[in-house]
Length: 419
Image (cartoon, rainbow, N blue to C red; front, side, top):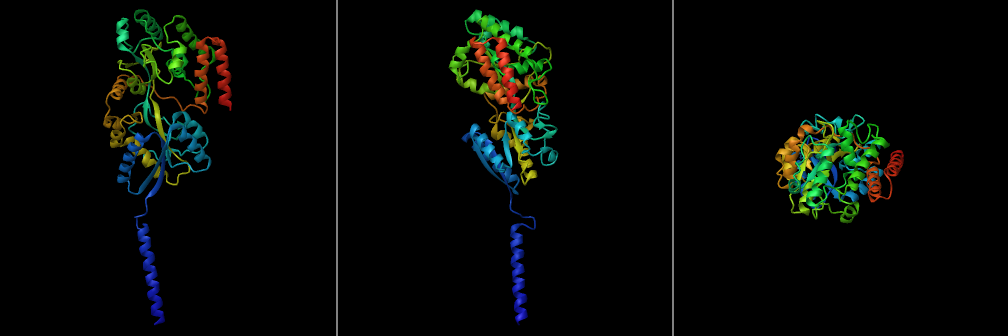
């Protein structure tokens, strides 16, 4: 009898264990894999993001996603702390300017390990191939992008009998247009484009060069920078560009707020912001170029997605990234909130209206002119850009000469790159 009771108790215990094992999913019904997903943005983007995550979880019931977000500066402060503590999120939003820094620290997962399986990249727009790669490893994939472009006031161009920007016009043509507009209308022909490093990059790319070399050094010398900054000094002397005093006073607003100039150069998605600052019609056009067939324009990733090198679930992380860049419904949900989508399917699904629709239509007109994006910039690129802005302002104020400005910039840039 005692032996019978023992057998019964043992059988009951085994049955309980088996039941518990089945509940835990040993038969294939395991609890969902848990992923942490961090990104920057505001409450509006948070609502859109939750819709996309809900859709992903519906289609992938074996993966649960916990999102977190902060505004841009707070996001990077938190990520720095998490990374130092070995607690980086599984999937994270990445800025192109920080990509190499994090890649070089060895904290990002090489997504090529999942490409073609969990991660599908076949539908990326032309020009995004290879974006996110550092030293032959893929540490990020683009979500959306934009391109450096010409903004112009068509009414002022017409009033001055100046042709609208079109492929084939040169930098000399642009300078002449600014002078003609100022003479005919009294409005400045443009902002002083030599205060922005991306205009130097455009000219370098048109010449077959680059802002930074593959190994993360400056891609130009002192003589080339001096020629660029001299262009701006000549425009100041002709009184055809917006004075630096005015440009500084109106910040953070743009020169479109009070129709202070007839043209400017910036990222094309800024059209949304500019359209909200003025009732004046603003259009987009191609960059001037002295090299036929070379606009120097490329699709720059507005933001990217990366995975942590320490994630315990690389396949699930790659699935989430793939879904966020490829799924058409996600494209419809976000529209242009994360920049114009980086894949064809999401661009077709995105319901774009107003300025965003204008940006998309403009990019289609120059799609065959866009070239491969440059490698991820070196660590410290943001500091170099800030130095460029500050030093060029001093130059435009007339406080230093071109040669002094060039010398100061190269000293600071080289210190930043070596630090």
